[in-house]
Length: 421
Ligand SMILES: C[S@@+](CC[C@H](N)C(=O)[O-])C[C@H]1O[C@@H](n2cnc3c(N)ncnc32)[C@H](O)[C@@H]1O
Image 1: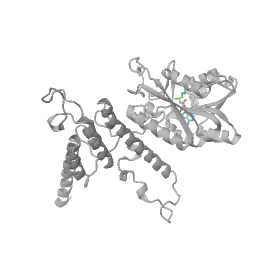
Image 2: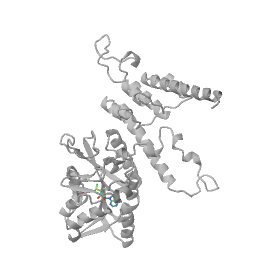
Image 3: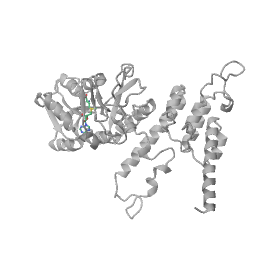
């Protein structure tokens, strides 16, 4: 490389380091004027190389009372972060809002695996936390729109030449968002662990993998929990809400350990459909006599292949439950956008396993709102029921499981949906 070019590269690197430090320092001090000046040239998508702090982390961490530094009154006072005084939530809120306007990413992880929302929650900064949840909802809704848009490959949209305007596709250009594959994408069951810890788990691999059944759990070949016995209470309440009286026509998608199906049958449906795609699970169903149970119709295969046939057959249902594994949020969305609407009668009820983003509270809160928004768009009204999650770690539930999928979330939000109006 020529020396002029090396000089230019070095000076660009030094410039980037300096601007990162300046942005983080201004965010730490809630110095809005300094930030506004910096954002004329740079954006808020920077991270400290030692701590992994983004400007959002820095602005929030400055509100932490420093036990060693006290003001004249003997209390932790408000002041400036540089001198060790905790700053106010109000100035943190203004800073966080400015950072979001300038490209800050709501779910960026620091080196402790904390998002800014995790810090705000720990410090009890409820207004800042709410602002982060709102930003997260906006970001995820926009991403979901972009995903929909990319599903239309050849349709002329912008130009008359039939090509898309690239501006619409470049996620990096959207203030506050990362490109979709990199973000913590909270999903119905892959928030059970696999996708965040092992992004290689996908539906196809899972459906070919070897499963292990034991008394209280079903594990995939990587020891990720597909289903666990502790979820029985959730399954029982879900089935009772969806099928509160005998004689209804019900469907469950994803058999797993058969817990929810057992609960449905306890309420004597007139017909109960089970859709299951994994050959080993189907084998298990055969061994346990599910194929001989009265009023039960088992459909072998992926719901994506099975349900169009049932629609063509004219099947109509009173209740549908969705709880699959290694599928993502877009699958759940497709399920209620297309299939719930086609198969459920006007007064029918729809429920799903709500593990969306359950690896941390802020993602769970964001995805509860995202799914509520999308359900509403699909013409479905959702009613949430809060259920206490037991102390799973304390009970040793995660022993032998690759990764806990309910981490620090104390309340399960159980959805029951019906058609609006
Ligand atoms: C979490 S378990 C369901 C647990 C169930 N709710 C219970 O009470 O035991 C998920 C199930 O969905 C199945 N599954 C995954 N993808 C599927 C698909 N596309 N179609 C049908 N079943 C699927 C898995 O094989 C697994 O048996």
